[in-house]
Image (tube, rainbow, N blue to C red; front, top):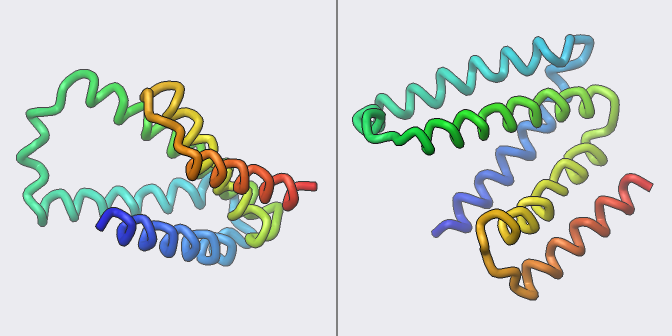
Length: 137
């Protein structure tokens, strides 16, 4: 079941790239990121309230807060750089290079989370890195 959500994530990430490229034409990318963030904020909180997720708020620990905030900072920085890259480059180059994050996440999951690096994950990461190098060079 997880893979269905992952495929939907990939589909919407692809749509994000196309829609963003059209939307940022002639626009300051920081402003575009701020507008996008407000929309995401409204959608996310709307989902929380409609699915009774707000009830879980008091159960969050300091560690939850710290790492969710750090994740938010990383997401924001990722979006700022992504929009700037989209404005300057082609979607067909920027979007795949952005997906180098998958290989980086695999490596970081081994280092920081102690996950086991399987041969499939290693080969997949190597192929992503190779493909990224092909697109950059």
